Structure formats: structure tokens, C-alpha cells
Amino acid sequence: MARESLASKQARAAQIEERMFAHYGEGECSLDYTTPFELTVAVVLSAQCTDAAVNRATPALFAKFGTPQAMAAAPLAEVEDLIRSLGFFRSKAKNLIALAQKVLADFGGEIPQDVDALQTLPGVGRKTANVVMCEAFRDPQGIAVDTHVYRIAHRLKLAGPSADTPQKTEDILLKVFPRSDWLYVNHQWVHFGRDFCTARRPKCLECFLHDVCPSCGKCAK
Image (cartoon, rainbow, N blue to C red; front, side, top):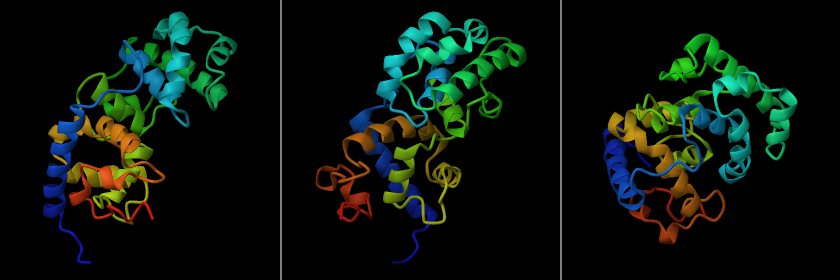
């Protein structure tokens, strides 16, 4: 099969986003939060964990330590106890306290509105920073590549075999999609990955992208 040109990928990407938007709109964040700080905490907690599990743990956590000031002074044992149901709760508790302390010390108590500055916070990587920039500030500086986005990008053949890391996959997606679409891709694709393009037994026959997906019907075998 001939290698697909970037222009061809961009044309398919435009069709994909048009259909995604028709089906999901802008897409909704699956995590519950009310402030940029709460969102950042929730995304940090979601690593190696389901959003549903995070949403069960955060109400009690936010009730006690829902601000940088409160979290920075929180006893480690109390934070651990509040998120004990989540994976890696001990390291996450340490990161959350350190994150809050750095927000106070370096950013005046406010979550920074810059993808690079966000990544200086303990526990915050590129994916988390991208989610916060898009969801909290509606200022996309990249596309958050989680397991859903990584899987779908490769099944749609927008990313090739050489894009074997989240960063490499993001780099390609940023070339394929215009910046105006970066705001929506992650949330739309998370829902799409749960509804249709599941890790196992994807619902290719029901998928609204079947005619623009080179893998349609193949990845289920």
C-alpha cells in the first residue's frame, strides 16, 4: 500500500473531526471539578486509574483540601487516606502536596496557563498539561495523548508505526489537525474509544468512521 501523503491525512482528519463534532459536540470532560486546581489534581489522580474511580474519591478530597493553600499544608497521611482507593495513592499524595506548594511558591497560588510551566509541577506530564490547557483555559497548546487517543490515532492510520510513543503520536496529530480542532480531539476521542473503538472487540460495523478508517473490520480480528 502506498504511503499516504500529509495532505491526504489532513483531508481525512477534517472528515473525521466533522463527524466527531456531529456525534459528540465539543466532547465533555469525564472528570468532575470546579476550578483549574481541582482539575489539575483530578487529572494527576487519573493516571493508571479510571475517571469514574477518581470522581468517587475527589468530593471528600476537595472538601478538605480543594485549594492550593489547603493542599500545601495537608498532612500526608490524610491525603493518602482520602485517595487510598486509587492506584499508586502514596506517590500521588506526595505529588499533590508538592504540586500545591509549588503553585504557591512559584505561581502566586494560581495554576499556570502555559503548557511548559504546568509540566514543572510534580506529577504533571505533557498529557495532564494539555488537558488542563484545553479544559480549564480553552487555550490548546497541544493534544493530550492518552491510551484512547494513541490507539485511535494508530487505527485510523493518522500515526504510523514510527510514532511509537505518545509524544511522537502527538507531534503527528498536531500536523494533521488544524489548531482550531486541538481543543476537541482528546475529549471526543475518549468517548469514541469507549463507545466504538474499544481496545478489544471494536464495534467497526456500527462505527460512523468506517469509510475513512483503513483499519475498519481488521483491528477486530
